[in-house]
Length: 540
Picture 1 (spheres, one colour):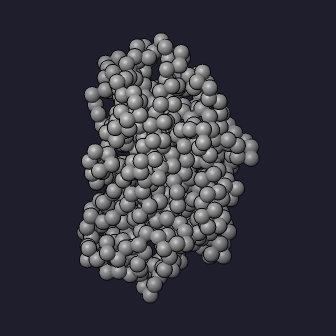
Picture 2 (cartoon, rainbow, N blue to C red):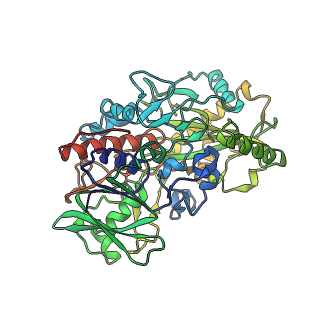
């Protein structure tokens, strides 16, 4: 018998396991479907290029064909490893905009405003550079500034300044708007994932059990209360059962959390009936409200061979980089894929920035799956729409827990999203045509120099745009009929069951979702411990 069972060892699950097991009286079980994170591929920042397509560390989900994107299926990578997305992402430490959290509270979710959430961001963070009211120095998550940014990263900043944008030294400080260098979740030359930050220091706790390779098949409900889970371990002939005396906490991510609720009889009645699953609690909002950041890439050839490419020269440089990395020295293997960018407005009437720029010193097309551009010298600017109006959904493919969920992204279904992304692309193009790029700028490969009018850009966006792997909202927090959890993150209609991950976001945040997910988990742990009459916490 455990006190708490946490399903999913990702960004949220690692924080929860740390916080809940801080009290020796609480016995905690953390179940992760993927393997442990003890591999150079996770530790080395550039290892994400392999993890991105690895069936061992990645769920490798694909969306359903989307009518609003010319019938395309979109790749949806998700971390399947201790640390979850924080083990395979680009390591950008971005909290979003203060407006995002104040909006959550304005929607009726008490305690989720910016000032409250700022405390939880600071609780998690150990910032190596900033020491002020916006940052923490005592948390477990190592956050640092880039020591040696690539010349291309600095080139983007110079061009943006020439275009009239302001320099911002801290996107997570008083103001988000502007351009600058991103802060990253790194410790020295290595990735600092949620597992490294929150699990590694506490693996010796006798009241914390971590099981990898364990996929949960269902949550058990007894008399309206979550009493435990069934799960299967790789290679084991029989299913396992674990019981929870206090709570079961679902932290499986915006795709797998609603899937698990539905497999357990919690969700839309018609969807469960379709797959022969007995209805335990009807919650029509489970799997609805899926939101993603839509991303359009501008790829430009470089006339100067100082960007990434898969030439013999660059392969040789990477081999040298591996030696440098193994010797503990900085080099290409220890560099983040994205170093500079910013937050701008698609138009002057927008209240807070709705476009994010992420710059890379290589050509990146169709999630990197298009190999045709990899041997070319070039650079990419990702233009990301931060708060889309379009909504998708997650449903079941079958009643078999081994089957991937059915993902309908429905991106760009709302014409306003297309209009704002067109405006964002035009503004970023203006930056890329400043004199800072004159020596380097070759032909624009995609969307292409011939794509000029708003109509042509809109068509190119529908044909080429993807997303940046930030799914949220499918177990939405709120009090209305389509809400799945309340502002304590308790599932409506079920005792002893919470959802704690990015799926609870009512609306997507204005930036990368890793840091917000950890802050959500930190707040959730506080709520859970308060409900248990315990406030013990530590990062030891």
